[in-house]
Image (tube, rainbow, N blue to C red; front, side):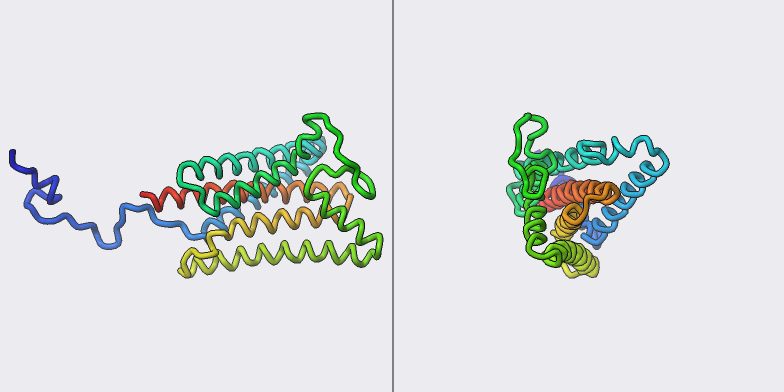
Length: 248
């Protein structure tokens, strides 16, 4: 039986099939700058919705921003999604460093958000110096602040300033890396831009948590933690799509 030239040559006349110039079967890579831009737009929108809801519907403020409230539950859902997504992507595409980092951070923060199950399982966490309970990693930052403040109030303020400064620096690093990728500098460290943004937001939330007991600023802390959890979830989606693209 004669060979079909359409199968082996691509065309009936026997000439070779050529891809159009610039065309590739592999999906085009979306730059980190575009991912960062979209993500910042999403978290800005979510923050605006939370703020407007709290202002326009005063009766829901307690449910919205309290411990185990709507916003914190949203954070837990996003973190759980990031952990499960990183684990699934590691199984599907192999345990790449972005998946390992995202899964580890998500798991640590998930345990922290749920107080390691203290309220759910009913066990009593150890007391924290100066009041409260040691039921999360963020309490270690509070403990350091209180111990330093016992020595000198200035040292406590310096500790908060260091946390806030490092967090803002990480967010600026995320922007710079994303912009470098947008200018065509290649992926490199820029593939971790959203991860830097996530850690920066978490650090800023902890600086707020350490520095104040104000209800208004506590609400800001919950909003920052939700935004950070959402960024981590987006990062896992981004890296999963990139892993799938490179396998096609």
